[in-house]
Structure formats: C-alpha cells, structure tokens
Image (cartoon, rainbow, N blue to C red; front, side):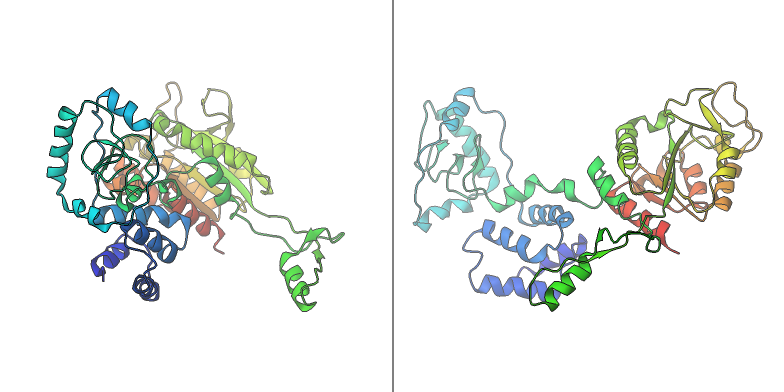
Length: 397
C-alpha cells in the first residue's frame, strides 16, 4: 500500500526503515488513521519522523504526492465578512456528503467563480453556497475535506493543505541559521581537558543516574571535579560588498559566537574579499583599524581552530596576483592565495563556510576562485547541516 509514497520519501532523504513502514501499514490495518487523509498524515508524522528537522521533508513529500488546492484571493469583501462570522459546530455522521470530494479541481474552481457571481447574502450550513460550516466544497469552518477554504481558520483542515503550509520548514537541516541554531551548533565545538584540581562542584549526570538506580530509585546526587573546554577559535569573516546579501546571516553568526562563553579563547577578525597583509577589527574594514596578519600568525598558536566565512568569489587577480587587493591605495606584495596557504600551514584545523548554496558553486561569478580555495580548505554550505559537518571536521584528531 502506498509503495510509491514510500519510495518518494526515501528519494527525498527521509530515512524511513522497512520496519517503520511495516508499523505504519499495521496501524492502518487497525484503523488508527480513521477514514481521513488528515489522520493518515498525523499517523505518518508520529511513526516515520524521528527528528524535528525531518518534519518539513515529510510535509513537502506529502503535498507533492497527494496534491493540493490553493485558496483564491479575489473574493468580494462581503464574502470575507460573512465567513469571519462562523456558524455553530455540527456533528457529522453521514458519509454520503463525501461524494462531492470527487469533483475535479477545474470544475471546482469554475463552480467557485459561478457562486461568487450568484451569491448575494451570507450563508451558514448547507451544501451549495459559499459560507461557514456545512458541507459545501467552498467556504470556511466546514466539513468537506477536499474543498476550497476561504477566510477564517479551518476546523477540519485537509492533510494536503496542512502539509502544503510547511510549518516546519525552519527546522530543516539545510536551512539558513538563526542565532539560537548557531549557538546550539557551536556548543558541539568542545574538547574537554582532564579533571581540574579542586572541589567536586560539577553535577555528574551519568553517575547520578547510575547511583540512583542502584539504590532502588532513591535519589543520590554525585558531583565531580569540573573540566574546561580547551577549544580556541579564530573566526575570519569576509566583509566585502558581495557579502552584503548575507550580512544579517553573518551578524547572527557573530552574535552567537560572541555570546558563547565555553571557548577557552575567541578571536574575530574581518577581511575584504581575501586575506592580505592586514586583518580588520570591525566589519567596516576601516583603513588603519587593523592588525598585522603576520602578528596573528605568530601570536595565535597552532591549536586554534580556524573558521573562514565568505563567498570565496572574487576576480582571479585578487586571489592569484601581487597587487590584487581591491582597496584603493593598498598594495599586497604577495598574492592572497599565498596568505591563505600560510594559514593552512600554520593551523591544524580549518574550514570555510560559504553562505551561497552549494549547487551554485560551479556556475557562479567567482567560481574559479571558489574552486581554488576549496582545494586549500574544506568548504561547507552555511546551513545547519553544513555547520555541523564543519564542526565535526574541526574535531577530528
């Protein structure tokens, strides 16, 4: 049953196992979905989805497989007024009313336009006019699962419509990050030292659970000596004009990192297109408000984890030639690529986060320089999934 739906889920990278699918079919056999597509939708969500980041994948596949109906926006104002005034609730037992579900979409829209021309007053209930309640294929708060909802909040929303709204798209692994998601991702960037000397002041959750279980459920709290995160982070952010569309994203990243208090040390500098003789202290990249790049390479030891953030897109001469610095009045004696390779040689772990979608990397302006930089640093898309992959790369010993 629904084998094409199963294969479509797998194609869209929703990890559905055969056992989970068999559980779903067993639940259907027992009638747990009722007789509605909405029930089937929620049953799929409860059995097939294992993480909140997969909710949107299910919604998009569900909407694609089962189709959908969009609500027209050109209703006269009096219709909206009638529909906002919802009628009474109604108990439904007669399944004959479901015959109207078979109406084809084209016919339904044609009938909808005809009703707009014909209708002159408000209607509640019934099965013909555009109104509230009732079993008509158009209106608000009604009981026809395959109709057009116009205005108000649906009481009996069809599963296709719910899925089509994709309310969980912000939970996807491949979506652009907000501040909280940045913070949660950076919390994984931890490497702990050995237990410090001193008092046992840190709650040991694992041992507390074990001791409590051993004592038959009597709570026994266990403390241990604290450990410190040994991670030192160097964050280098491109502040060139081509990064302007991603300025909010980079600002969120900066706020998330600056508010994180678990790093042993954190340094943040900015560069313009590529790294040259100087790194800037602020994103405005004001002349003179900088530190010497050689000073950074000399004073920040090789244990720092380095994260570059930028589109890696520039004119080839800016990356490969002396004097390629696009800032007027600034001349670099060494090509930008040589400076990048110095960072590669100096630090053990570096990654590059790119705000541009990975599918566009090979066919975009600056693709040549992007490809060259990818040969020097592992590059990941600046999404939740990309950031987590990058952090794993930084933690590999």
